[in-house]
Image (tube, rainbow, N blue to C red):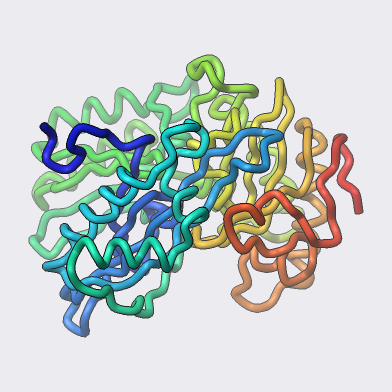
Length: 384
């Protein structure tokens, strides 16, 4: 018998991540269970803030399904982390809804039972109270491109791979050939990131020059704009049988059109997150992107706006059933307003909320209700 599950498996999938501030590259708030490192003055792990109840999937037209950002449940010491993880897992095993597949994720257990009740049961199972969450700060939820040197002297190169697709592009970067050539001289590892990129990891210093030469030869050095660097798409058509619209094959075209509008407004180098999925299951985590696009049908998308740049706040539905021209037309005046009226260091999603274009999403069931001055449209035009 499995020692944790026993005779009964979890009702649905269960995602666990670890994040080390100030980087949230694993999107900790989108996962069932997360551990946020709290470091002391010397950089050692003092303990962990524990997050529970995140998840991205939903179904069009069914308001009882919704994405949700995780709650910070409490703080635990390093020696208690494994017990806390097991307790969260077993509470979901025992409390998770097995009558409806769409209602079987931990996020719905937290919504139905309440965070305080869930935390109390976790504390009962570990035999001690959790501490109150400790302060922390995230700056972003993207990857850090280029070289990083580790404390052990080994070096790590993060390469931008648009939407995670490794291929040789005619007239462009030879991603597949380049990485294969790097593998011939690299005796470390290749790691895939949560943002669809590749890390050439554990490079010995004497091998760096050879890898740099291959990166330059095959065009692996990213010249992408800020918007493209912060983009992500699911595979969608024709790979995924659930897809209602294109995603991976279309997002680059849309980004090119949006780059032109951003450049016109002097925003070409502004970091804005954009993500697209071909269906509402949210595999590319569009609901915590500042610009989120979710497939509704062939060449049609719902547009979500107002999420936090660091992935800590959900977006809101802004307009429905938009085609390419409708998406560009909806976003262009918002880019213009952002360029003219933003506060210093204000992110795009935060600006849209402060300026009243969308209402801030509290969590869960609030996701579907846009209570701001702009309502979701049922055509390619945005209601103003």
